Image (cartoon, rainbow, N blue to C red; front, side, top):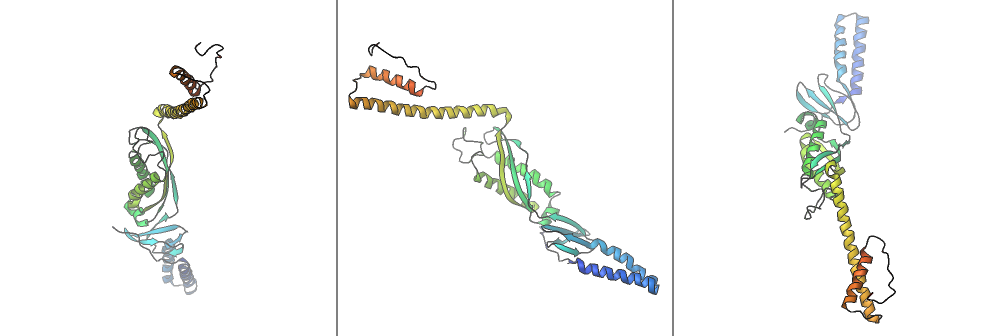
Length: 284
């Protein structure tokens, strides 16, 4: 497989001086000597003009002569090359790809919407020009393929797969590194360098978003209730222990059960409790 090679082009300023000299000689010969031989300088000058090229910073010019790759001008400046060479400019600047969110299935099969931001640039101009048909379109297609493959390899979260160590939602740098690695492998054929890849959009698909939201809410409610009950049991235990130590009141097992029941209702209720004042005995 061929790779990029540098081409040393002639200085464009030197060739400008040569072309002007030929122009002066040609016109001077026709006007002063009146020799038709000097007419040959005119088409020669016209043929030299297409050989001039300007290469801007972070830009290259790929040169092809009659179907043969001759090299790439990697330095910026004003140059002159063989006029018969085909010159194709290739930018080396960093580019952004902000993909639109696409619908894919995660590892468990849940439909999700996912989009990424990719920062890339051309590293090998030969591969980018000749190994693929259109390297920009190639980046778009392979990026979508990498997103689909990565999303299908990991669950959205660990609600249904509690053993999952890496999830799309909480994977963070791990997911980004895996995405960068896969994109690097896929885009290497086109001479593309992946500088950074990050997930910039992640959500459940609309058809299951409502159900997943209710599931998350239910999970949060269960977790909160667990903490409330745990705290209430500790408070009831502390209350009974304090009453027993200070001999404030002597409670038998039935009274303790009633007290525990009332305290648990008061402490665990999600609404304000309305107290009932008992003006009689404990048994009324």
